Length: 173
Image (tube, rainbow, N blue to C red; front, top):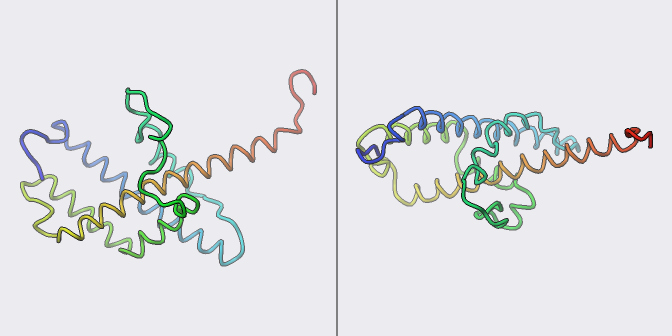
């Protein structure tokens, strides 16, 4: 809820921007999961046509690299995912959209946005256990989406390196 001592740096645009990014990320992940399921049914791998959207939404400025303090390598690893979820982040997306469907996620995010601008608590409209589960799903979701983006970027980099290995260099080799 809104308070006098903390109000998104006195600029509600930060809150609206974060809300919009999270909503777009959830929509992109839903489409990505749908594409991945279609690919599995057809025996294909995911083309990840939404990689550009994920890069925009999950760029480095949204993660620990934006902080000025030095970080350990451990700080860049997912903290909320199990080893199985790290190996296959699409498991998290499956669980995320099994917990609530896309319209329900969007409605709940809107409830949080409204609560942030008013002097009410989100706990007035939602049971506390649900809030804990909701936040846990969001934390896992964001880490899984980040892993998917990193994995796709690595695949693209490896593919580009493979394509360029036969090209002549400056020395003609």
